Amino acid sequence: MTELTSTRPETAETQVRPFPLRRGCPMAPPEEYAVLRETEPVSKIRLKFSGREAWLLTRYEDMQQMLRDPRFHSDIADPGYPLQFAFPLELLEQGIVSRTLFHMDPPVHTKHRMLLMPELTAKQVEAMRPRTQEIVDELIDAMLEQGGPVDAVQALTAPLPSIQTAEQLDLPRDSTDLFYRWISLLVTQGSAEEHASANAEVEILLHRLIAERTENPGDDLISHLIVRNRERGGELSALDLSALVRTMIAGGHESTLNGMTMAIVVLLTHPEQAALLREHPELAGQAVDELMRFSTVSDHGTVRVAAEDVEIGGVLIRAGEGVVCALQAANHDPAVFAEPGRLDFHRKEAAQNLAFGSGHHRCAGQTMVRMQMEVLFTTLLRRIPTLRLDVPTGELPFKGDTALIDGLHALPVTW
Image (cartoon, rainbow, N blue to C red):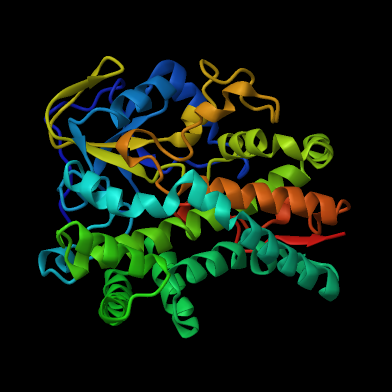
């Protein structure tokens, strides 16, 4: 695997730290983020997974600058890309899979994203709210019927986005295990062979679905993409359409379920804020912003490569060097968020958080995710007001630094 190298001598000022950094408390950012933000906001790191070197940003202002600068790109095949999982690049080289939106840049990214965005407008998402409410109520009904303790991951946070994504795409029921095995590999350190096998299986299935719905389009997202692409002259291939569907499945599942799971833990460990939201459900939008800020699950998955020499935070980042955004560090930057370690559902600046990214790569499905979270949290607090953790927080099985997205393997709760 190609390593990013630098001609600069390593000094005390350019110490290369192993990354990800270790946390003291799994519910809080690594303590070293705060130190780096003050003393070395643009610092050198070596990725534990790939051994590549990159720059780590820990200040909100620097991340905003970088994420909006077209001189940084997202090409996963670039030798300087801060690769943190075993993606088999030969799949791209051999044309077996196409890049997803995560690894595209304008103008190609813009063309692909615009084909998808009509499915995710505020109006479209709001029309899904009643069905989201039905799903949440059904899941809570099943919890109450079973009785506590239950695993909230299996009972709530995994099935909600899974069911809604499957319905939106009209996926075959027997395909969900394959898709979620593939997704889990994207955010963990599975082998290249496992990645290649899962990607091939996913592509075979999606190409079959695209072929079927090209002949007989229905009222589902895949059919809508096919029809919209045809109306626009058929610019995108079946491989491109498949990549858009993979973007939807990946973006709508792992980050969402882990964000929901961690947010429930935050709610249950901050009873005064939980009570505030229970009594004032109209605060749901602000609460979701604050929960996403307070416990950002996709902490270091936002990465770029410099296409030319660029200065960030007074440091020259050279062409070909990778950059990693520590999003939790940005969302706990006291220059933007006063008393960042305090959860506050009245916090006005919470909407400025970077949990969904920034710039042209800002999460396309954020409106959908926010709606699902609003429905889940307000309904859960209203219907099970005595909900509590069934084990001390220190015994919760956090995923730790073996995954690109923070979360829990299980969340035992009772009432």
